[in-house]
Image 1 (cartoon, helix red, strand yellow):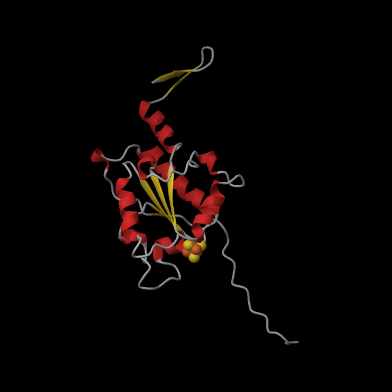
Image 2 (cartoon, rainbow, N blue to C red):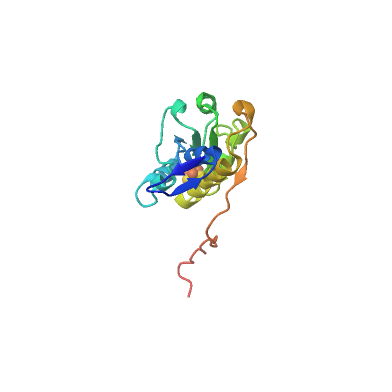
Amino acid sequence: MAITLEGTNVITTTLRRVVNWARRSSLWPLPFATACCGIEFMATACARFDLARFGAEVARFSPRQADMLVVAGRVSVKMMPVLQRIYKQMTEPKWVISMGACASTGGVFDTYAVVQGVDQYIPVDVYVPGCPPRPEALMEGIMAIQRIVDEDGLPPEGGHRRPLQIQVDPTHEVQPQPVPLTVGAS
Ligand code: SF4
């Protein structure tokens, strides 16, 4: 495939590469934001971090118009069927990010009412660690999906595929917990 630029300049590429470029540059997230991680998602989309640089700022709240489900926050057992239905209503190819400790493991909410990891019920492609994850970490997760779209192209026949299960590593040095002060000590 040849694309003619201004004047006599021409670049050649494959149609598949152009399609993948378009797909990876237009991921539309559906934020399933149930708790504080949702606020971090909002920060990611705002001007300081500007998710639009990755073409992924068009948050949609209709599953039929989204292809990247971002589970941001803890999910209760009662809410899980809703999340499953939303996932099913999204059309393939679709991607799932589990954002934060609560979505991936239940976090500190080790109770009977909270799902201890959404991957028990829906396929998760990328796990973003943190409580909450920094916007940069969420962007790293989105870029992981973009790389897969770029490299692997369209999913296998029928649109069904195995979850990618990519683990995003923290991009910062983990600091030690602060040591408590002893009041009155000399
Ligand atoms: S991982 Fe932390 S910030 Fe995110 S929803 Fe759970 S408690 Fe809130």
